[in-house]
Image (cartoon, rainbow, N blue to C red):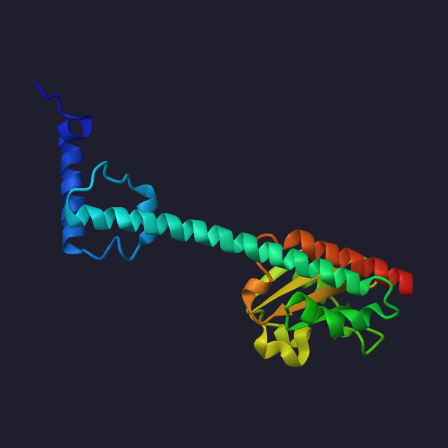
Amino acid sequence: MTVPAPEQDDPSRRAEAARVAAYLTAHPGFLAERPGLYRALHPPRRVHGENLADHMAALLHAARAETGAVAEVARAGQDLTIRAATALIALIGAPDPLAVVTAEWPELLGLECAALAREGAPSPALRDLPAGTVDRLMAGRDLVLRDAPEDAALLHGEAHPLIARDALLRLPGTAPQMLVLGAREAGRLPLRGAGAPLRLLAHALSRALDGSA
């Protein structure tokens, strides 16, 4: 005697399953357009025919896509870490730290531009900001990553039309100031894995500025 599975014996479950099956039959592209759903599905234990083979292939494709995305994030973070180390070496012993930031760091970091921005900047080597800008943008944080910043012209000057993502890092000091980095390609400033190398750059710049004062 065969004992039906609980879900098969439950009329409400059978009705719900029938509705789902009817919907998928009427919309055959539903799962193909939403590959992330395959992560929540149980694959068949055996492959019977081309339809189930395609189902298994879709499951594998979704898993590989997710794995690839994670690996890409890891590679981006590692790349920034290596570039940040090179930028730090360029800063060591430099007689003019600001010149290193604006002239050398963009190439070393693979970015479009880099600058120190300060409210009431006393020097053309600094990007001048209106009073209250640093507090408004940082909102109590020491690092902010932004996509397509609306105030790019203020922070990145003539390079602003090219900026896809920027990073703002608050530096200590009596005057409100930030290290401002702008990337043409968002992946150059990854949302994951960028915190440690970027904070290290800001800390090193702050120490270098104190030493050159």
